[in-house]
Length: 90
Image (cartoon, rainbow, N blue to C red; front, side, top):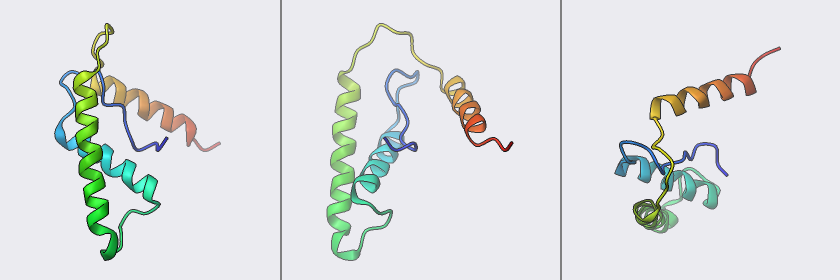
């Protein structure tokens, strides 16, 4: 899985349209193998991002959980700590 795609489910407040779009963009970039499509492929790329975003929003709206919502700041701090440990210099 692409490390830039973050979990969007079970946060309070819920994921925004911008967060969903950013995840969809990262996914399509990963699958297509590039960050900027050629002019010939731009429309297909843009359509894919919009379709993935729509499906993602639908999925997030339908998921249920009994776990308490996660806190964005706490999750970001955990990620930062893991990243610092992973990339720490000896």
